[in-house]
Image (cartoon, rainbow, N blue to C red; front, side):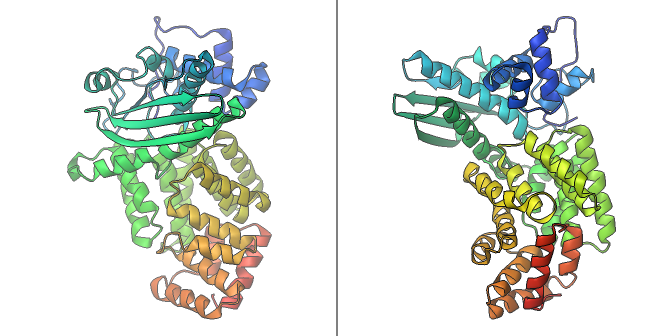
Length: 481
């Protein structure tokens, strides 16, 4: 089970779901989106969100994995012990957004926005989120940070204020330490009032992607706190956070350290889905960048890790995308495309998922024409885009023949990754900059003597014919074997 999930076991006193709530719960646990559920049950997507908030509260679950476990009768920890596992991640409490405008419509808007942020953060963030109906009963702000945080079992508290008139909406969001109320992060959003439902969705997406994701505000704060801990006291979630940081250097040493940290995290908590997914990606990088002595062994470890992730949470969008890449590597492109479709359905507004999908559609399987809009949307959704987004953007632009733009993006990516150096060499060669290309070829030869273009193609994998031809043609121009 996902470390984010603390499913409630059934008990005689548990509130029963209505027939409509059970239908919504079963469809959501099966992987359907809000829109798909709404179409199936003839209700609005916003009504689906409201039902899910009530379902989470009634069942005492915090996300889709825990919901599925409850519906399937899988016992887990009681909901009043969010940190009972020694490696469990901290808990986030989201207070309803305080509406400072008098009109009832803006109160409804703030209420809907609070519910959306709660439900979506529970799907995308790497930590459990307390159900919205629980938080709604506490008001719009904590009366006592220490007491409320302790009662809720929360490490972080998110609160906000909304001001609105007929022309503009101003939303302020603040993340605080539940132990003392110290502000850790804040952001202000100022948007024109147009389509009110589109605006609600847009604000939800913006808040989610700035907070969640591998380099979102919550993960960054968590990593900074972890570095102050003695090594012997690190939990599974702490090790996972440190592993993500090392993984995203895409260097040989960083990738090896990431594998060590993820493996240690999974020894402490083998249900940590995101750690299995990141471990799988680390082994895929080991295979594609020729970091290991035996690429086939790296691919088998990649397979084992991603299969564990999918088994624990079939609807984790990053795990689905990673599984698609694996299927491409094993030559099953139909299965790869199905996995990418599932990844998009499970994470259509999750910036990390969209960035990963962009690279997969450009290089592995699917329609490469969809890759550029996906990476552009990922960057709009996540203004804190980590360097690997730019590496993904660079390879997508290269495959589209936009070599100058690819160079600009790649220069903002991770500097110690052999595939970034390769794409810089290829892009410069395709642009006619033979001297610049030669410099990157020389760096590859000196720093990564085991790396090869064909090794990258087979290990990444690169199976879209246009991408394969573009890489091989530019490699000839660059003199890169």
